[in-house]
Image (tube, rainbow, N blue to C red):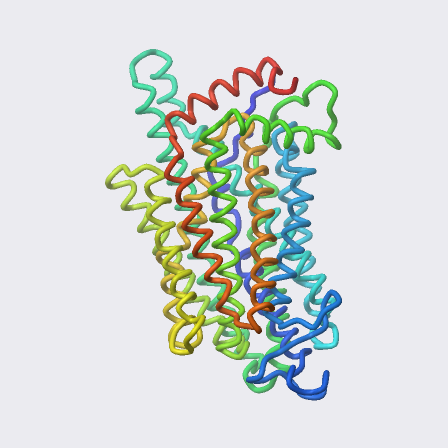
Length: 492
């Protein structure tokens, strides 16, 4: 068998700063387009613009609130992502395909960002639906295969290689080595996201200048045009940051294809194997359930809050960009402080993730209070500013620790496969949550806070599965899986 580790250069973790801003701006541009195209539901269709009485549009055979449309479109996008990752998720483990997958997703995402320049007329909101779905798919595809490379980076660090040799020679305890490797995984993940945040702050500062230059607040037309320009600008920065990595990364061979498989079939077969093995890898399976549930809670919570936020600040590109600056500054600070605390006290990944999850549940309670009152629940500008700071400091570490935890409970040679599997599961949950929340909003008479009741209950249940995960036991299960796969027994 060839070397199963596709080692990346250390500079890989500094690859891109632009992709998150592209995703955020496209979401806001999409919702802004829907709001401008929609009409007041208390009046005859398309006779009065959206206002305090609500905003609706005909979508998929039914008149829907625009917030419900955003959630439903997210659900459709995540369902498509699940199918695509199911097909190509395993490719990164074999041959030299992984860099190509990330490059293709990146180029397609950048192309979508420039396409937004042609969708500024509210009458083209259906084209906006298509671009929004394509943007989500390509963004998540690039992000999935980017973060899946982190465990290989940690394993190939000189100090970790030296530590592994000392274990083989009997000069170092295995548990001590595993803890050191776990800390390096956390270091790479947390520092990477913190550096991304620093880069995003610079991009957002430039965006403020662009908004001022375009006079976005002078008219709705200028505001809509500014959204498109910002999306294209984000895509351009993403491509600029990615090109050096595309050129300089050293490619290394992955696994050889199992007998009787091809690149067209390996993804589906590997997914079946991974699901089957997850039933044997009990700790991996427990974390998979938790990841499914809590991923659904967080993705849907953020989407619901975003729809409320955009309505509160009236889709102002300047206001939204300033809010993003607050969010990204606190995000970088929060992720890095979490890492400093973890490093100082040697806290495990699971413990840090558990602490982080507690604050995610508090976020759902915050929204839940707004079901029966207008005094609280993401309905005021001051709440939106507070939310951005809170989200960055206490919630954003999820994106680092939840990914690192996957590597704690997955076999290293099939790391990309298991990351893709978790992404498929994440996307499955991510389209179930918005679909359910969209239905809840419609059934509750367009009460946009009602989904928080469902989200809090689901989040509380998910914590039980995280508590049951035993990381040391998972390492033993993964070692046995690797031995079976080496003899191809895993595929029989």
